[in-house]
Image 1: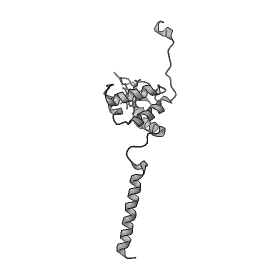
Image 2 (image 1 turned 60 degrees about the horizontal axis):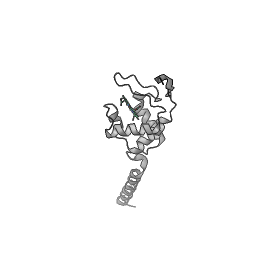
Image 3 (image 1 turned 90 degrees about the vertical axis):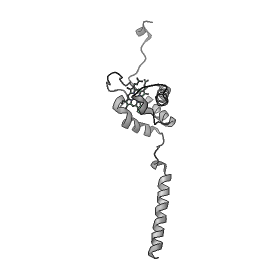
Image 4 (image 1 turned 45 degrees about the vertical axis):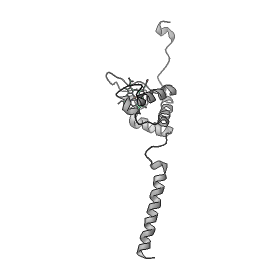
Length: 129
Ligand code: HEC
C-alpha cells in the first residue's frame, strides 16, 4: 500500500469516527433529562442557594430561598415553568430556569420531590380554626 492510500484510509477512518462521536447522544449539548441528570444539575446549580439536600437553604437577605425537598412535584413543575416563562417574576430564579426544557423541569421536580423533607402540614388550630 502506498503512502497516499494509507492517508486516504486514515482520513476515512477519522471521518467515520467523528460522525459516530457526533451521533452519540452522550456527546450532544442537551443531556437526557433523567433523574441522574437532575441530581447532578441540582448539585451543580441549585444547591448553592437551596442547600445540598434541598432542605437547608442559605439565609439570603430580603429573598430567602425556600425549602424545596419533598415539595409536591406538580407544584415544582409549575413554579419552574412560570419562572422560565415569566408568569412568576423573580430576578434570582428567572435565570436559573431560563434554559430548562420541559423534560428537564419534570426531571428536576421528580428528583426534588423525592428528597427527605422537613415540610409538614400545620394543624388547623394553629390558624385559629
Ligand atoms: C442564587 C440562588 C438560587 C439558585 C442558584 C437557585 N435558586 Fe431557586 N430560589 C431562590 C430564591 C431566592 C427563591 C424565592 C424566589 C421567589 O420569591 O419567588 C427560589 C425559589 C425557587 C422555587 C419556588 C419554590 C416555592 O416554594 O415556590 C423553586 C421550585 C426553585 N427555586 C427551584 C430551583 C432550582 C431547580 C434551581 C436550580 C436549577 C434553583 N432553584 C436555583 C434562589 C435560588
